[in-house]
Length: 637
Image 1 (tube, rainbow, N blue to C red):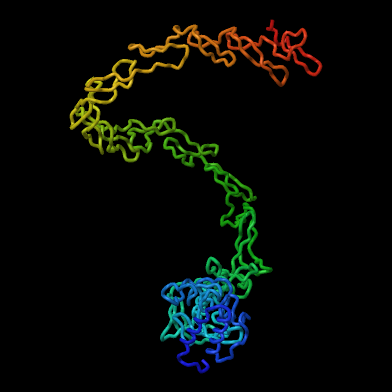
Image 2 (cartoon, rainbow, N blue to C red):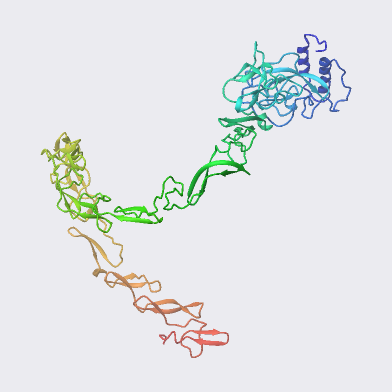
C-alpha cells in the first residue's frame, strides 16, 4: 500500500467522516484522503470547480466498476448481509440510487441493488472484499465491494463471471440445464452465502481445478442484474436419439426453459431430427413408409430420400376386387365385395370376377333375442322369426312364477306375493333377488289406544313415543288448551284468542276460562251510497235503500253533482257544467252547458268571441271567412 503506516485505516475512516460537508470542505477532505492513500499530489483546483465532487454530491463519482445506472435485481436474497440489522440511511450497506445518498459519497452495485460502501485498507465486513478501483479514470483507491454479484448468473464463459481484468470465478457446467457462475472461495475458511458450499470444481475449458461457491440444492434463479442484462446460458435436450443445443435466458418471470429442440428419430423431411449435424441420414431399405390414398394405405420401405421426401416402394391401394388379392392393403382378401348382408345366403366370387349368392333353407339365422320366436332361414333366403305360442318361457324375473309365450312375447304371470303384513316394512319384489322387506320409518303403525303417544314406525319397529306438548282430545271448551303433558291429556286455561259468537266483535280473548268480547268490528265498506251497520246475528249490513236519492259525488269529472240510486252515485241531470268545445282541428275552448243523467256535459252557450251573424252555435273565423258549426251544435236553442 505504498509504505502506508499500520495505523492508517482508522485515520482514513476519520478523514472520510469529516469529508461529508459541502463545497470547499468536501474538496479539501478529498485531497487529504488522496494524499494519505496514494502518496500523490493534491489538486489545487478552486472550491466549486467540480473536480473530486460528483453530481450526486459524493466525494468519488468516477470510480471504475461503480455504476450509477438503474436498480438491479436480487440474486434470490442469498448474499451475506453486511450487518445484522437494517443499516441507517447513508450508512455502509444502506440502499442508494447515487453517490449523494451515501455518507461516504460512494454508491456501488450489489446483487440486491445499489448500496453504500466505504474506503478500505485491507479487510471489509463478511461478504465484502477490499478491492482496488479507479477514481476519475486514473487514480486508484481501495473500496469494499460485494463478493457475490455474479454468483449463480447464467454464463457460457469465465469472463462473464469476473469483473474486467479479474479472474478466479469459474463458469460451472450443470449438464443439460446450462452453466452458472461460481465465486472463488477458500477451502480452509470459506465465506459462501447461505444455500451455497465451497466445492472443488474443474474448469470445463482450461481443465484446472479450483474451489468455488456452488449452490447446494436446486437450480440457480435469475437475479435483478441477470434479468436487466438478459444473461443467458447454453443448454441441451437429450434422449436416446441424440442431443440438441439451445439456450435459456433470464427474463422478468425468471429463468426460461431450454429452447433446444427435442431430438427425434431421423426422418426424410429435410431436417436434422437427431441433431447430429446431418440431414436425412438413415439406411435405405430399413425405414418404413406407407403410400395412402382414398382406398387405403399400403406399407413399404424407403428406398431413398429426394428433396426431403421419401421414395417409397409400397404398392398403390386400389378398390377391392374379386381376384384373390388384398387390393386395398387392409389385410383381408375380397372382403365385403359380394356380401349381401343376408344370413341365409352363401356369398362368394365367381370365376369371371363377379359375385354369387347361394340361398340356404332351414338353417338357424340371426337370433332376435326373443325366446318366443323360431329363427330359421326360409325358402326365399330371408331370415324369418316365426312366433311360437303356448311355450313355457322365462321373462327373467323372479317375481313372476308362471311364464309363457303369447303372440311371440314371453309374458309373466302369477305374481309373487311379498306382503309380510308388517306395517313397519316396505314390501317389494326385485326381479333378480325376489321379495324384499326394507325397514320403514315414519309410517303409522298399530295404535296403542293412548291419546298422548305417537304410534310410528322407526327403523322397522313400531314405537310409541310420548307426544309431549302435542294436541290431544278436545274438551269442547274454547278457552282451554288440549295438550299432552307427562303422558296425560290435560286442559289448562288459555289466555289466547277465541270467538265469543258475536260477529260484531273482534279480537276476542280468553280470561278466567271464559271468552270475553273484544273490540267492536268496523263495517265501513267505503261506499258513499250504503248505510253500514252490524247485526249481532248476521254481522255487517250494508243497506242501499236508506241512502237512495241522497246527495253524493259522482265519478263523472264534468258532472260530479249526483244522488244515490241502488247503492251507486249517479250524476244529476240538468245541473250546470263546463266543458271544452273543439273550435278547429287543433284547439278547443271552454263552453257552459248542462249535465245529462249519464254524467256527460253538453254545451248550451256559445263561447264569447266565436259568434257569427245568424249562427246559433260556434263560429270559427279563418281569416275573413267565418264558418258556423251549427251542424255540430244542433242541440242549442
